[in-house]
Image (tube, rainbow, N blue to C red):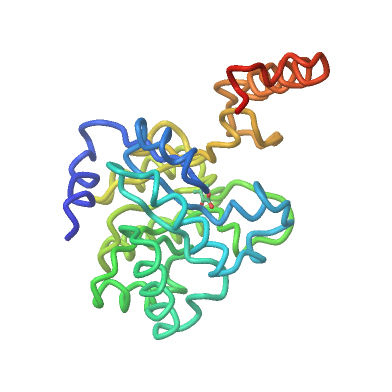
Length: 258
Ligand code: KIV
């Protein structure tokens, strides 16, 4: 097993794990200083391309952005989302996961789902591909609005069974998306691999957010998104200065001219 993955697993019950998304080199360079895991999420579809669903993201999109991110990530574990329809069978999953890893040099891939895709996950792991799981709200499967999961006994049992199944088959960590707090807490206590929450309470072993959301670059009003900084204020300040200096022929001065 990859040393970086061992290190992530060893953090369980010791220290919280920080996971953040990145879609390009310059962002990745900054994020790498603070994150344990850098995720090239297929959320890039909605964040960068304004797609209505992550289903429109292609393998080529993921590879292109991941190659850029790879240039910026030096120390963190780099995980890449396998996009919709790229892991419908075991052989397709392996072919595409190998392509992603070969072309992007990432450490692991993430797939959405539990029992329904366990054959594919098992096959990838048997073929030495490191896999991160993703349970709860599965953006590649939902139609319509995000709703929390784990509201009734049936959903609760399904989530716990899925988490155990993923662990048994060798995933090294599981993203828990929009799962009710008590259920996220139970799942986290019942498995020996880390859970990384997104809208799933403080009980998870770590947290992930879309970086563009938490810095206020992407406009969203999803309940679990806290804006930790309003980056637009800083961007606007710089752009305003540039505009002023261009209009008043202050830029480029001699110093900035050949
Ligand atoms: O696509 C993504 O960015 C994700 C995270 C938000 C967990 O899957």
